[in-house]
Length: 235
Image (cartoon, rainbow, N blue to C red; front, side):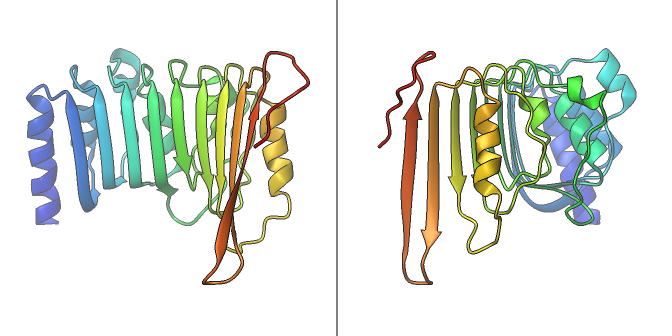
């Protein structure tokens, strides 16, 4: 744990020097409340890319109420949270966020499914423009639903997350690579995504089909929707 504490102190020192961009590619480091407080009170940090962190603490209430983080870009890879509430509050603490990328974001222990309360569903990242998600049962889609215009999702596991209405989404790209995992309702889930995007103009679906360990192929479906036109373009 000594190395863990030393690394956190180094990161905090960097944040306190009015850093604008912070990229951390680490082994799994356990954060503490001091790290979280410094992260969210930095008045200059606009780009944050985290890999290999375990967020142990929730966001202090005084940070949520009294400070607005200027962060515009957030990338998360192999980042772990103790509870869904920690993850939920972490994302909502960046109200000016415009770009979100998340890959292998987990809530421990296990793969418990988050069931939002009615009051939760009105919360969202209202300035978000683009999001790229991979293996994301953990990030509630309703957080992205009101401001997002471009969404990319990579499906490598069956996805049972609630599908909200995406009010402003105009471009959606879905990659499917289940590697023989069974998901009988996959296409119905994608259809629900399509039905809940009233302003969608561009839809791209990539489907990777593995025949055996030596042979696989990909096909792509690209539909352009022009206003309320009935005709689309398929290639």
